[in-house]
Amino acid sequence: MSISRKEISRKERKLLDEVRDVMLLHHYSIYTERTYCNWIKRYIRYHNMTCREGLMNDEDKVESFLTHLAVDKEVSPSTQNQAMNALVFLYKQIVCLLKKCNWISGKGGDKDRRY
Image (tube, rainbow, N blue to C red):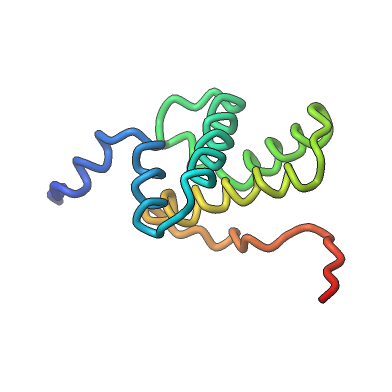
């Protein structure tokens, strides 16, 4: 089984550079890019990840990080939502290209919406 150039260049690139490129491709705001990259950095630091393989045991890690924000850091629900959206973006747009992620829906919370 041979490895294509695209796979080699993908492995050599930094994760946040790849996130920025995808966000640029989809015309995200620079402010959204900065915010999402900040949350992704915090997530990676929280779990002491050193390589992409650390992103593979994903569901429990995301849940524990969001619980940490809510319980230990006592951040507001809107801040938790922002962190969750950054992680949903990470797993849907970057990690799911490597594997199938059926557990990500991007919908969550018990928000009572009124229109």
